[in-house]
Image (cartoon, rainbow, N blue to C red; front, side, top):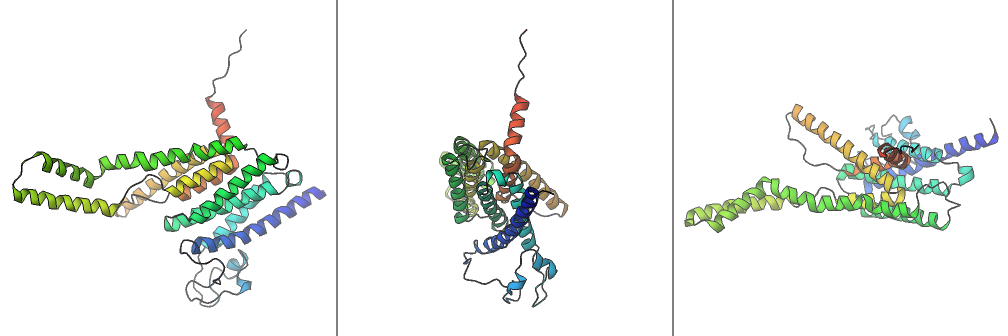
Length: 331
């Protein structure tokens, strides 16, 4: 084994250890940011007994394995989420660095890619838990993407491993986010306005009150029914196909990875989200439960962006080549 191979192996080991350490911090972000808690002032503690966790029990991945997923003080189970996030971060960091020749191309661009992936992990898990995305994390993703694109444009030699041009990034910023914005905040409310039972009933009652001559008792009865439907509509609130967090997430992802990866990420998210919705519906029918009508889409977008960050551009190029009609040579 030559010196370069040894250096590469050592680099990837260091990247994994650094990744699981970052993953430990991401766990803190996932749990504390949605609750509005400080990331630094509060020490780590058992979620069951509240006992502060000693430093030697905070070693990422290895402490969880050594303690067999239990609190040293009270013996209660520690969520496997901790080791999943830490291991996932370490693995994705290593896979990111494996894409590039760090000896020739340097460490800066792979490091920026890892920073973006870290933000995706936080967004995905916290949206799964709370159905909300922290504005600060979305802003963080946008800043990382912006810095990456600017540095790439200013110093192409230092970032020659980057396949995405500034133009690709700018187009990518709007390629998916704008359709999401239009579909989520215009098309979906219009469609829902026509299919929602309370809204349909309210329209019929208003039309009847306006066009028909009714006696006072019947008019009061209809007004009371109308008030009930309007109250139900108000309680449901506005219905959107995508949240603003989804739009901003895809804008940052498109800026970071380019329009091809953004389109692939959206396709993966829509397909995987549809499969998940079918699974939920089948499970609800099997257990004789009410079907879940809405769920967070952010986790599927982060999965899509994560996959697209490695294969998105290549998959889109393959798809475009497949659709391209071959030219017939003229003899």
